[in-house]
Length: 306
Image (tube, rainbow, N blue to C red; front, side, top):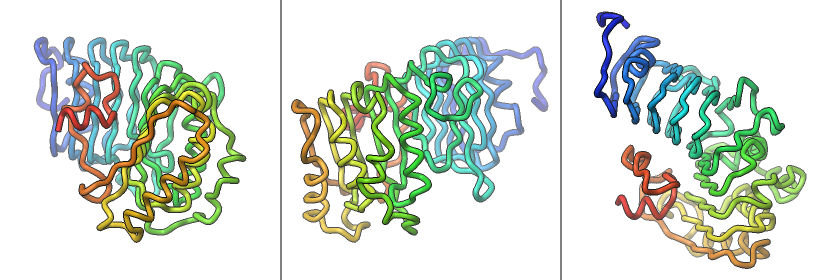
């Protein structure tokens, strides 16, 4: 790291926040490695291609928001519990962000991944649902999905198949300006995809935000609800109708239609409206570090913090 002696350390640093700062490759890795009690790393607004290689005995939570993220590798982080990546984007058109999960035995909350633009690697293997690529410790997962895009949506089953012990799934539906292949995103597509073990027998909590009533959304929800046997609570939050082509009444009707014939007979279903910004409210770093809540993406936690 330029300008800082190699022998320096930060023995008392517990939380590090970096906002809109241009740093050279390896700078953040250096600071993390020299901070033996660092528990929280927050990065916001990094506009230069960000590449992180995390080696830390103390980190519990890493949050990267609204940044050009090229590659993040969790090499060795035995205490890491949460990895939250929100609003990330590549600094070169068409390139995907690479997320690599190595030695992180306590990691149980992961998100907000975008299946269409994320290459997920687990123990050096690119995601394909097989025993060698399963992250059995992940209990909470959040995905940002463009269900109107066939390429994006077809990656969802592969991602879900890598988390066999998933207990909470949170979906943010991203608006798709160009509905590439949306006509193919019907219920037959999801039937052919087949439900994963976590969908059938593990997921107990489900939330879906920014629902607009589009064909791909309704088809996914029908598939999901008809296969989740142990689901206890589910919520569907409508997108602000100011930014949709559907009326609230029509979107509500479609949501109710999608939740008919649930496999779980004990699920409590809630439909919610929204007056927030298009795409939902921005992520709050505070949410990620409230450890009294096991699930940082939970709607319950959002209300409590707000």
